[in-house]
Image 1: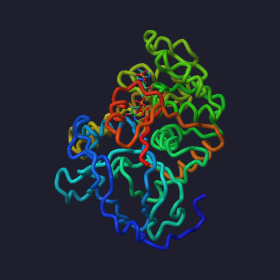
Image 2 (image 1 turned 90 degrees about the vertical axis):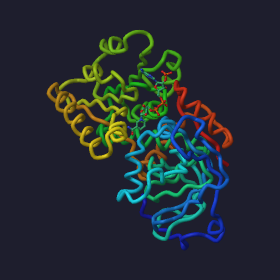
Image 3 (image 1 turned 120 degrees about the vertical axis):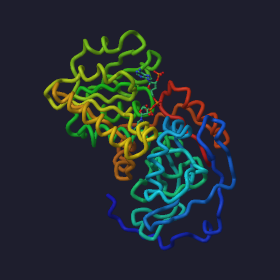
Image 4 (image 1 turned 180 degrees about the vertical axis):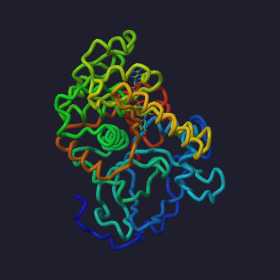
Length: 375
Ligand code: NDP
């Protein structure tokens, strides 16, 4: 529980007060991999609010959103989050540091930080509107941070927060799943071999669900090793036909998108509260294309129309989103330390190899996570 009190006595220690710059990979404009630039002179993070803390980064996880953000994805929405009054000039987000997962050690605590102290080992999923973890230090709010699992190395720990927080937000907050209501539920995970899929499979399996997964044939053994009960190779023929002969499902998590929503909702048990949740939504494209206000209106109209259409057929249509949360990571830490879920690190890169790590994630066909070891 987050009730134990420890007040860090200082806003900044002498050692960090002296630092004004740090090594980091930054981008100065949106584009392809060439925009990634290493610098030893990135701004050292500053504690601006008393509930913030500075983490020395030991390992950083990469996600497809880092590749997308490198190209400008979500820029309109994140700009609004960073600068709600629209005071700053266009491009004020640069130099921008990517990297959404961090595992490291707390260096400094703001005056109101009660649950953490210096030298605590922590992990976090970093909201996309904040500076990321491909740097020596990162500043976050204490409520986004959690003590890291003791049983994992920093590299392993950095493979979990962003995908786990996304899977939790989609399956628990949106899907209504809990550890005590999953027994015998039939769950279908479309795209089970990537970052979110490998975590989601383990999570619902540990809660007693029956888990069916779609993936490429060469990932079948891999996802079975994570607990999948039934695996469907989507490259073996029309996947909707292969799935339609199976008993219907209570919940579908869609990590694939595209045309899946045209057929997947027919696989749900109708009039039973069954839900389809997709992580692949047009929300950020809409705000990038139309601006924040019109994009949000368009998004609301689209989701309302689809929700109503499917409700008439007795199934629930939902969009799932990443949500940063230290308390959720506390729960996931306990699952990790209890060996109910594990980190799936596909490949590790050194800090000097960040562009290669981006290339790896961008190529797709991911089998778990790509992690950068920072120090
Ligand atoms: P990854 O790239 O790690 O994994 C995607 C996986 O899907 C790969 O293993 C790929 O392997 C597999 N795949 C591709 N096509 C299919 C298919 N037709 N059927 C089954 N499997 C397929 O991505 P993540 O797991 O990190 O993210 C999944 C999706 O969720 C992404 O689109 C991401 O942008 C989105 N997302 C959305 C969030 C939100 O807030 N809404 C948050 C996090 C992620 P192979 O090609 O070899 O089959």
